[in-house]
Image 1 (cartoon, rainbow, N blue to C red):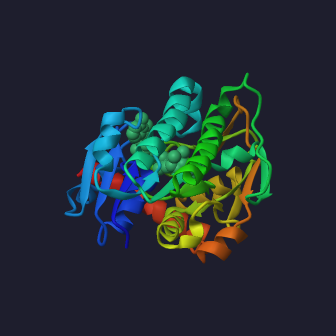
Image 2: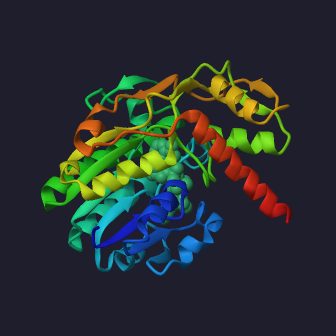
Length: 319
Ligand SMILES: NC(=O)c1ccc[n+]([C@@H]2O[C@H](COP(=O)([O-])OP(=O)(O)OC[C@H]3O[C@@H](n4cnc5c(N)ncnc54)[C@H](O)[C@@H]3O)[C@@H](O)[C@H]2O)c1
């Protein structure tokens, strides 16, 4: 398809899924410092003849230069993600997400990379992001709340990506994932948390009254969008909101669906202690038009497959 592809954060949840899709026909380098390790759940990917894994950091220019050797395209996913992480490690979140992105862009431009795909976030649209398209204004809460270090770092990263693309004639694309879930999500995520809870016989914890609204996007649909950006020239210089607006559900509704798939499960409510994003649903017309992309997996099917994966991990651990 393309020349050699570098996936930063390649050992992460989304990174391993993109790598799994691309590896049969592409040479891949996965750069990751293993802060999270979804790769441990798919050892055959690390062993694949087209894949080389590099344990390194996007804050370390030496690791980056080594990883970029002979690379034509970069998919930059490495980041500190997950709401608890923003609160526990605000400075690291800013450094990795912003300085790591600047490092990657500068090194990529210097080594002649042709395409650069950047994973930003739907959080750049702030706490009320209902039916947002790419032209919707960005909203970030006040600096007194650490919650917004992530969105701030990603939004500044977006500007760097766009401006570096223009300055160096690099085909840059921004993807904003809206609640991507699926097997091998090892960090935070409501679906992963709910599945783990029901399978370990614990109640599902829903924060607050459970009314926050999300559009749930199965990981294979997100991979389709990332692959379309690699292959379609229309993606150059564009930003895309990537999510599944047909599969909109509240967090309580999501908990009930997971509980139905695992009968006997209970749901309990806990007070919300952090700034909440009340609604997050994308308009995806631009991705439909320019990438010919359409999410295909409905929430019921996606949840069934994700729960099945969590069950298989438990069974494997018991053996
Ligand atoms: N999953 C979602 O719904 C979602 C939503 C919005 C944005 N995103 C973005 O998409 C990307 C992938 O997300 P994910 O869900 O796979 O998260 P993830 O945490 O599973 O993957 C991120 C990877 O980056 C690695 N990493 C962290 N710091 C690093 C560093 N300094 N150097 C090298 N590697 C480092 C981690 O070890 C991890 O494997 C991230 O940029 C994330 O911010 C994801």
